[in-house]
Length: 165
Image (cartoon, one colour):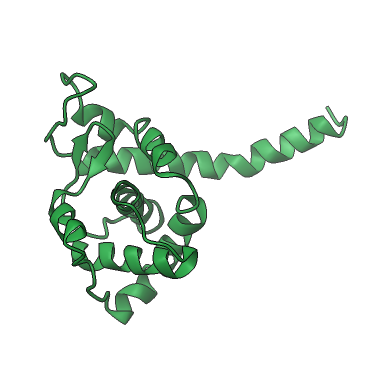
């Protein structure tokens, strides 16, 4: 498994290189969560062992907060890890990095892993309950299923739109 600080540092550096601006903290936490979920989708295993907490605006990796605030996310991900997870990172960046932090927050609010971590909390409470890796696996499986049926749905829609009912 990878070191979460190295993964977060990779995301910070890549975001800066691709978008020519610094990533805000909320977006970093969401992309880190989505990277973990995407690793489960593509590889069937988590990328790192650290756990997220279910905060009011979505999953947060507490260990990364101070490092972000102190501008200390500058570790390198080993080249072998970059190669191994290239498709995971590419998917996350193409699907999610272009979205606003708030839309990513909204997206994570639909995930059962976050919803389960928020049970019994009011909307405004921070919350320190860890997201269950099993729940993230379930979210990953649901996304994988949706992606599998999308080509079929598109084809049906295109046929219907072209008058081929």
